[in-house]
Length: 606
Image 1 (tube, rainbow, N blue to C red):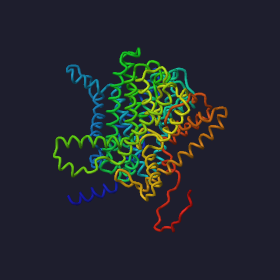
Image 2: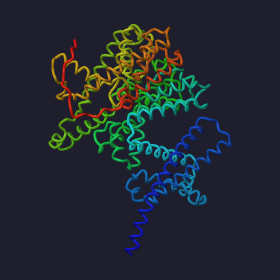
Image 3: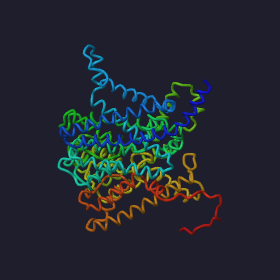
Image 4: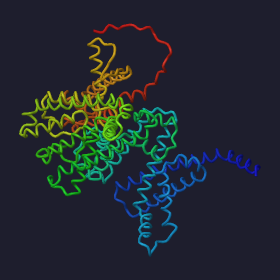
């Protein structure tokens, strides 16, 4: 018996490298099959199918289904211990359901029991099998992408590349025959795709006369993915379903999603999805209640309208299914509640997911204070309000109220002329919420006064909260710049706020972000002035700021730009969404910290 065990162990060691190579090869085949399946679904979604094409697609779907069965079986056969250790419960459920789809193949259709017949028909359903294959395909591709992080690749480059891939896929999708009414050029398709993924809201064509309902579904999916973040989505799929990622992978993902620790990594991703689902669902419900029976729409159209605008508002995307955006006559009059709901969604999406998580902790803490043991809770939660939360909430409130005041002052008898007092206050507050990234407009911005346009540009530059769906340099950085300025004027050596000292690294990054954002804006306006020599400089500045800071408003200029200018705006939207600092970290080789220091000296300033 001992001899047998030695032989078995020896054989296992001998075969293990070959088994791993074989499983690695099957993994590559599975990735290719997943991509092929998604491409086939896109083709089926975008084109009218002939019977022959439909048969070929069904054959491809069956082949992918068989490959997934083989891949799952091989892992269970040859790597059962590691598979059992790494697979999460939901992955086991998906694997079991995948095997259950073999029932219609093995057993004939039952005739007696209704329950068994219903189950058999569900397992035989083409729609059910396609949904299962879609989930498995996304799971495999997400897991493969996160595994790439373990190859010592630059996370900044992976983040940028992921956005480029989604923008490219969106460009192809929007050019499908079913997505447009009478076709679209590839430049406009690229522009709309980039604007959606980068949650900007600039549009080079009239959406309502260009895209079909299928096209709007694609646009919604693009800005939902862009709002959450490509790496957030893929990391969630990989870590939530497949827990077999390396420590290095998890460290990189932690840095990307800005989680406080590895222990809270999965919870951070989960909270991001839960908050998004809850807020967007609640927003959809309240939007539907606010417009019910007032816009000459059927119930299905009202629900679709509510869902689209709820997601668009929370993601700060700025897309609307109505002609003239939210300045449409159906909405402007007698829909104050709608604009207030949209404002709240925009604010919640723009303050950032870390702030929402801190809000959750504060609410739970208050509940425990009311119903738990107060002494113990106070000892454990000394600093319940995060410093970032305080800074973002205070700055957001100041910007909202100051923006409302400015727009009321400058547009009371101008763009808001003819409105009631309540409507003027509502639209002033709504436009104040939209300036920093949302991209919506309830009035023609080209009719705004020069003062309001300058305020718009300033607020677009500031943007929303860090790790949010908003753009700009972020209110966090803007607050640090103001605090640093205050400390310089007061002659203080430290930058302090709310009983805390701001770290030097945060100050340096804020200064670098401000400088790079202004340089990028200057270069983009200079380049646009070469392409558009007959356009006023203020319009070019507004358009460039809107694209670079992913804000979205326009002075009705975007559709009349040349193709070169549109492509430049695409680049600006991409750079603004990924982040200038992130782009530079991915391009410039990082210098290692040295153990020596040069003698310090002062530079004459002022």
